[in-house]
Image (tube, rainbow, N blue to C red):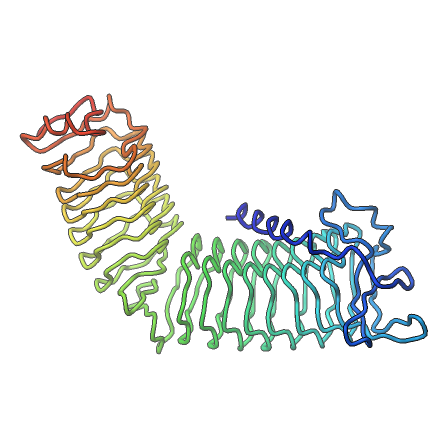
Length: 459
């Protein structure tokens, strides 16, 4: 995930480089400005945008070194202009910038204005600020920040990968943008204002020190991977107004011991203190924890529901469940036993990848489809039982089961089974015994892929 985010940021910058202005309108006292359209105000800018620190001209060429105080007004050509904005990329990648004081006259901080200012530790934001642009302080050295009470939105990746230890989001903010505080690994707490309605995709992802956050009653939407890998987060209560929770919103939150939905929520529920979030209309478990008790009303284990629950050692899937979603138990590395109940008809892609402690897998006769990569690279599985009802097995479904010594297939008409590519790839076909129903050995020996097993035994 972290490499994906880095890639996204790089793509973002690469896409914008041709659009960046390489000029300024005037300079006064070593500072650079552009005229605004109103003819009465100006935007604080730079002499030449810096894209990457190692390619940058010496900071002294810009004059923005150490502690910078941006003036509220500037005199030029006999006129006085009000400074109302910080231009996009104004300080980007300035490795000598330590601290900035922004005047009360400024209402807008542009895109990537302080991005990659690695030594920037403090910024004094004005109380009149209303807009913090995308990537404004991303990858900077910021250790603390006070967000003014007129800001309505925290931009995309605005504080991504900073050194912030805590954040207090004011009541004026209604939206926290995508990746806004992602990778702030030193952040231990976050206080959200009472007006926040949307937490964007990966907004707090990989805040690995985050222990506490209270979601406000105003919240209606939690984006995909919003709290991905917040491994120290201990409890979450989903407010009553929440209508949407994105896939993987709480993946790898291994310390979660309390997960519930507030009374009155019309979309989600957490019945009988199950420590899981259930989508009521579809009876789908969408978020689970290491200690979830799956209710008997659940019909589907949703996509990424237990993704990265490393503390889970066993799971009781009730007979009400008919489908196990993609990545449902992805990297549940300590899950030791697995029995697919007789109600399940489909196991989706990657459902049990990375369950490295599994030694036996028993797939019920009711299962018709085992999708692509369903049990890919589970290195410690020794025995697999495939139920009689299987009609389709996807590509690489059992690839890389290095230690498997026996596969029991209950399929009577193996020639009718639709097989994906390399279903049993990397299994030792000489060491692994394939057990098949009586009277079917010849059909298995004739069937593509199955016939690669050197020991096919009827039972």
